[in-house]
Length: 241
Length: 220
Ligand SMILES: [Zn+2]
Image (cartoon, rainbow over all chains, first blue to last red; front, top):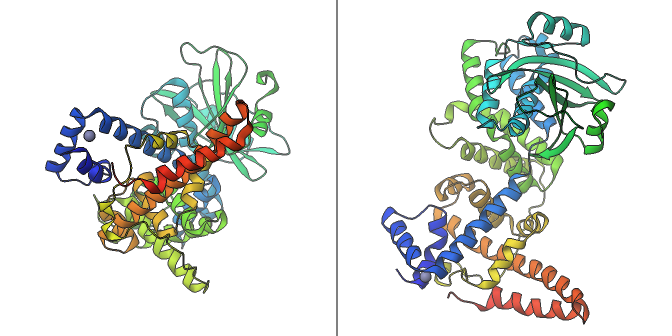
C-alpha cells in the first residue's frame, strides 16, 4: 500500500471498518511511513477531542429522574401508592452514583462507573426517604460509623433521604437534599488515609459541580447540578474559603 | 427493586435499567442533535424511553443497546414531527463535494493545515457540527462521538450502508473545512494583533490558507 491509497482508506481504518487483511496493510504502511503516521495520529487526536467535547453534553438530572420515575410507574401502574416517592428514590440512586464518580476521583478508586453501578444494585434495601427525624433514627440504627448530618437545613435546603453504601470497600452514607426543587447529594465517609483537612475543594466533573470538605474524622463530597456559587453556599461556613 | 409489581415486569424492568439506562446521556445528546432544542429533547427522550421499555422484548441481547435506543429515538422524533405537521425543511447539500464516488477525491489528511483542527475549542466543534445538514451531522455524530459501526448507523437511519459512508465522508469533510477556516481566523487574528499591522492582514492570509486547505487539495 502506498501513501495515496492509504489516504483513501484512512477513514475506514480509523472507523474499524476494514477487513483484517486491509487493516494489516494500513498498519504495515504506517510502520514505515512517518508522514502518514503523523497525519493518522493527528486525526486520532482530533477525533478524541471531538468525542470528548461532544460527550460533555449530559442528560439533565431532572430528565433522568423523570425517565426512571416513568419507567417504574409503568411497572407499578396498578399500585400507585409508591408513586410520590419514586422520583426521590430514583434521585438517590442516580445522585449516589454521581457522588461516587466524584469521590472515586478524589480517592483514586478505579472503575468509577462499575462501582457506581454496584452501589446502585447492592444498596437498594438500606435507604430511607423522609425528613430529618426519620433519617437520623434510621442512621442511628444502621450507619457503620459515627455519622453527622453534613449540611444545615434552611428554608431553601431540605433533607429528603439517605442511603448506606460502600465506596471501594469503605462504608459511606449518601444524603439527598432538595434545594428549591433541585437535588444534590452529599456522600459522607470516614476520612481516608492521607486526607488533609483544609478549605473545601470545589470543582466540576462530568457537568456537575462538587465540593469536598471535612476534618480528620469525616469527609463529605457534595455533588449537584448547581452553579458553583450556589454550591459554595451549601458548604458550611467553617469549610468555605 | 421493590417498585415492580410482578416478577416478570420486575425482571424486564431491572434488565432495562441495567442495559438501557446507562445510555440516557447518549440518547439525550442524539435527541438534542435532532431537535436542536433542550425542552424538545427532554420530551423526545422521555417518550422514546417509555416506548423502548414497552418494546424491550424486541431488543436482542448481546447487540448494541445504544444503537437500538437511537433507532427508537429517531423514529419517535420522525413521528413527532409528522404529528405536529411541522414543515420539513429541505436542506441544501453543498455542491462540489462528490457523491457516492467521493472516495476518489480523498480527504487531505496529510495537509499541515489540518493541524489547526486540534486548536478548535469546544464551541467551535459544536458550531461546526451544528452547521451540517442534519443527515450528515447525524452520521458524523453517531460514528465519531457515539462510536457506532456503519451497519448500526445504517440501521438507525434506515438507509443503506453506502449512504452512511457517503454522508460520513461528506459531513466530515465539510466540518473540517469550516473548522480550519474558523480556527485559522482566530489564530491568525491573534498573531496579527500581536504583530504590527493589526488583525486585518492576518485574516486575509488565513482565509487564503483555509481555501487552500479546504477546496484546493485533492488527495496527496
Ligand atoms: Zn505514507
